Image (cartoon, rainbow, N blue to C red):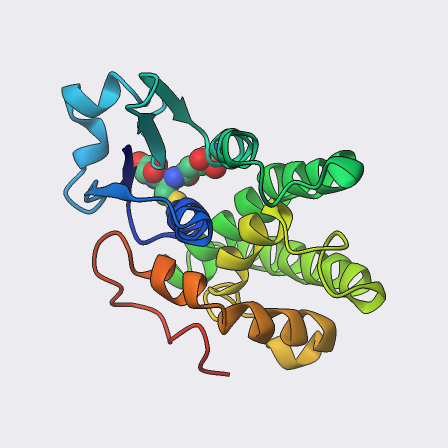
Length: 210
Ligand SMILES: N[C@@H](CCC(=O)N[C@@H](CS)C(=O)NCC(=O)O)C(=O)O
């Protein structure tokens, strides 16, 4: 049994969606970020940066933090969503997500959604990053159905961030290839289930609402 410490956020949802896709039985443990539970002494032992998600695989007593590392761990363990002949193609998109999509869209949420009006510079800058990211995603998806030939951990890592398009002030209709991909993935039963596996989903339109 795998314990998943998580919250209903883009980084957390990557892992609950992956586990639902794999059909793996897991134990969801909500870390309530509003209540600062990520800073508890207990959680600090498995999450050095005090962030979700984290998994503990009780089969072999393995703890993994960082969502990209967790996706890799699960893909390797269950031999799914990381085609061997496309390994590096998939990995580069996962790293692109980890290094650019998540951090920049996360900052955009801070300036555009949670604390608007504090810094015009930061709002313009992060809105520009969001548009740049979506133009890259759209270009890639104009050539193929998914980020690699088949649905993979690249799609699973990127999709939960695009589900928050409103918070980073992106109109998905401006990016028709992302919109097509977004809607397609939104209908996957594991995505719908995994979106709400850990904690309450209270703030976001249903992923298949567009
Ligand atoms: N690079 C990390 C980022 C994790 C992250 O930023 N998690 C957020 C929620 S999406 C968090 O735990 N925030 C709590 C905090 O920063 O105090 C990953 O991909 O796992």
